[in-house]
Length: 93
Image (cartoon, rainbow, N blue to C red; front, side):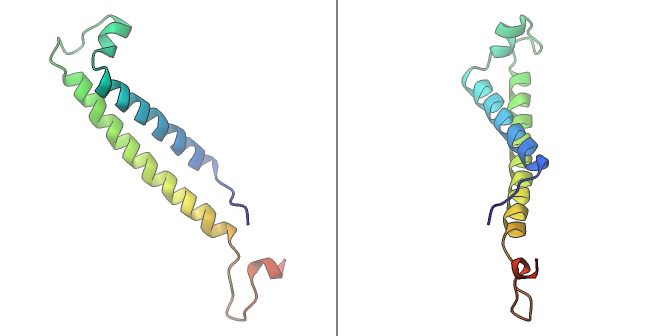
């Protein structure tokens, strides 16, 4: 059986990927904000970078959990279910 994923699964997956990229870039290259935008929002303390890391991690974790729930729901919905009489949902159609 083929699983059909909802649009929410794809949105959550894209958000998780974007959060992963932002998290990795900020951890590897912490001064990207200053170099990209030409501003120093935290006056060199690094607080904004750590806030970005924290928020990115929370978004990544949340989106991954939600996408996993959607994935499990799609997989569960695509397999034929067996009724007490022994017939499967695919036999009924």
